Image (cartoon, rainbow, N blue to C red; front, side):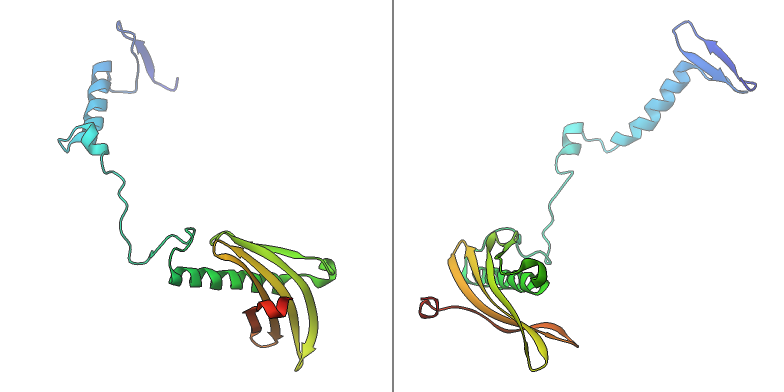
Length: 171
């Protein structure tokens, strides 16, 4: 064994030596000394574990985005997030593959979902536009939307119309 000698002591410890003698008591004292430094605070283990993980208040986190809104400002925020999700679904729809089918959407952060139908692509003022109807099913009820999104070659998709439909327009 490359110049090292191995000795088995009476208490069952096996020690390998390379020049210096090392006993089980020496190893045990070394381990106790090293691990003893972990509790040099003078507190017991129960006190050390209490409060080891604390939740800090942050000025950057105002509220959990996955909790539904319970006030008017929160409901407005959720509606805007859902309208963004509808816009993204309409602008990313592959109309050649979709055909005349209904496209479903869902927003995990607000818990809302709905369907988009009747997507029609046409040209308006040399821009590709997509006209559509959509539903939004949320904790505050069901809303029907009519929308029109257009693709500007320089700036990307923009919203011409995205508004709730009145009952007169539906019937």
